[in-house]
Length: 204
Image (cartoon, rainbow, N blue to C red; front, side, top):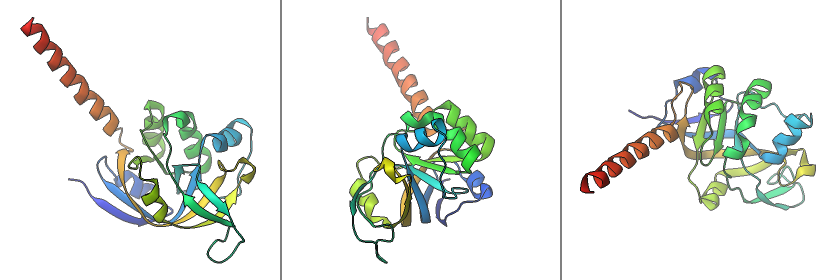
């Protein structure tokens, strides 16, 4: 039986370990946006961030934004135009250091991650939350504001601090118990392939 959770960030390890694949989550509060260049600079080039990511979720994104005068509505001086999610597989090697060095508890993206990430989720208590592909316009409505930005010389692959409300539902696609919806799909597809091949052999 799956469960939906509407939660505030940061997230406790106890909560993360209570999640199982197929559960859904909606986030409220702070969500950090991160992408390839951000993490290359953080982990390959030794740059650090002034943000505290401990217990938080990150989303793989390089948002389309408009520079505006800072105000109560746009505290970081950016208006979100389109906050779309990118494919996660390119960033596989950063899962372990994100969790180990910065305390990140959830990664949001498209397409899933691989075995090293699944092992990191088990070891340190983390999850991968899948978002529907092609839903950037809807996603953007869940972002109330861009509150702050760091490493902004990398724009748009800066480290973004979003304030979000009801961001989701996101599906738990990889959990801290070693389960992965992607592996389940692969096994089912392989089984159907073998059945199809047996059928062709029998007809031949």
